[in-house]
Image 1 (cartoon, helix red, strand yellow):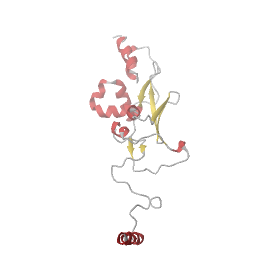
Image 2: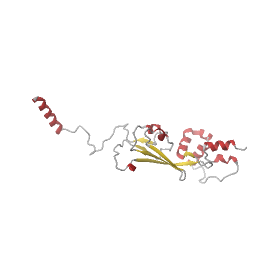
Image 3: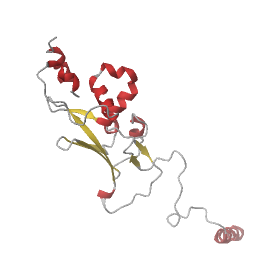
Length: 199
């Protein structure tokens, strides 16, 4: 029994004077490895407000609010209920709109501080007042489909607005039935306009 005790004392002394086995956290920050799933972060320039992240979030950590009056859509990610599953990042159509960072030290006493938001401009149908989508989403789709956007007037107008090819003020109301081709309409109103079109 005597020798094992001496061995343990020797190990304790060696541990005392050698470098620690664990990291120096919280005194020194730890750099996570590549692929670490930390806090999801919205990137305003790359998010298009398509709600793909909202649709796939299993923890319902993402919600959104559409404000028709101010024509804005606000996406909010709640880090306090997020399970960091990376589904939002995988479902993002731009692949850069919401990305999991390496930030993981998220302890806070204020739950309001544990949110990430993205605000996007909404496009409202001038005929029925319904939401068509986010302007950035329409622009993204217009670039994605290329020259095929000429088959969809709404995408075409969104692309022209981005290129400043349209006037800032919308065209005046016209009694001519084909004037609807110059407006960004929802699919239902565009169908109604084409069906009632008089040649």
